[in-house]
Image (cartoon, rainbow, N blue to C red; front, side, top):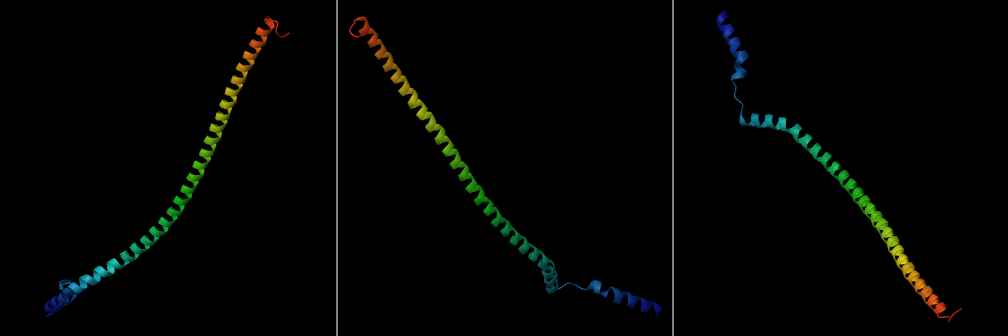
Length: 118
């Protein structure tokens, strides 16, 4: 009788081990396991949206800075080019005037030789 009682007790203890999971049990377990993952994924998606908006703001600032630097470079190049152009124009004008002065000096010297001018 003792043996039968021990066997019954062992079966009673181990009986839940022989039970099969139903499809609903499996779905419930999967749902319970997936729920925290869904929440975490939603949180990560929200964080990504916030990061994207920050990156967009940074991109806008960088773009504005690039336009500003480009404008400064254009102004500097224009100023240097204009000054070089004005210097070249003035140099050519001075060379032309210098040649005219030299020609006039030669004419004066020639006229002095002919004693037309004293």
